Amino acid sequence: MNFDKSIRDRQSAAKFHRTSAVEYMLCEHIMKTTEVRLEDLSNVRCRYFMAEIPGLEHLPTLIVEFSGECGFGSGSNADACYMNGMIAAGFKAWDPSCFILDLRRLKYEWGDMMTAIFAPPHELISMNDEEVEFPFAAIISDLNRDGLTSLVKEEMRGKPEALLFETFDAALERVTAIARQTYHIS
Image (cartoon, rainbow, N blue to C red):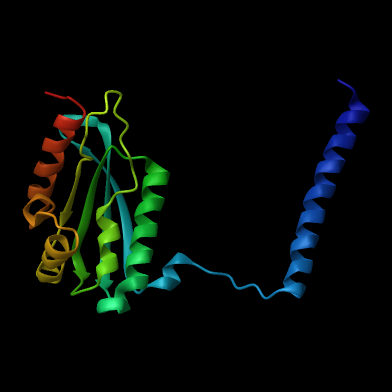
């Protein structure tokens, strides 16, 4: 290896990084920039957990918990965007095989954009074009039962009993059953 060439390459790379930073700084003088953060979209808070389902330990399971209070109607649009973004971030970061959405501590009454949180951003690819279901369930409570049941029935044209569960154990049972079927595990 040519020692002089190696030094020139590193100097060139360092110069590029300095130039990029200067260009960005110049850009701030040309246009207004504002730092943005996902958590500024909503008063809703998010926590992530990874779990191992007994008998399915090889399938990583993501649990996303949301707490707080959603706005009403279109007032919940930013909350839905935030929640959808946080779910997508969890999927990108941990690439789960199963997903449980814990909404027990989230107050929600109404708002159509919330349908986005019920479509996990993960697609299963089937080699034989067989339709498969992603192992997913949501846990609800008195804080959101009426609103989410209406959302699933009226806006999503779905069956609340197949998606919304009153307890963690019931949601886990549903996810386990879907996972066994989807991943062909007996």
